Length: 111
Length: 116
Image (cartoon, rainbow over all chains, first blue to last red):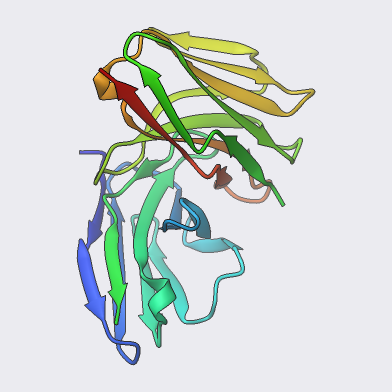
């Protein structure tokens, strides 16, 4: 185990639904990340959090809303998604400029 | 912002031969360059990394070289084995000066296949 856990592993949602992805890290890292992995853009940075503060929003549409209540937990709230948002969403954590540890991802399908 | 280009997108080599994957980056502030391997259905995992104050690093069959002036770095795998088949990602990272996080930008990946 890498110490980064994501739930759920799979999610199917309609375009009008609201759902949340959860990430938890047990590594004592100060930074957490959301990445989107699709065939078009294999590892696309979405958000970066440092000690619960968002430090980067990589031009992500507002239908994706991150939340970091503490340094161990990271959420991605989803609402009114589009079919093109279907992808694997990966969470990662790290200390500054060191190895990033990834979770196993949530496979999201928007119908 | 940082942009990382990775080539080739697919690579097929005979078992026992060497494989080379190349990446270029655009932002001279990037100073940490990790390489990740992602097997089918699994999460990306670090295989080797290099910092900007080092030109080359080796770990058994895997080596990475960095040319800071040209802003390119490469992954070399020697004596390839079937278990080396996977997607490999390079990345360029720089720390945010006002936080404990880093901006880690990945290349588009190389699908490596090892022919028996």
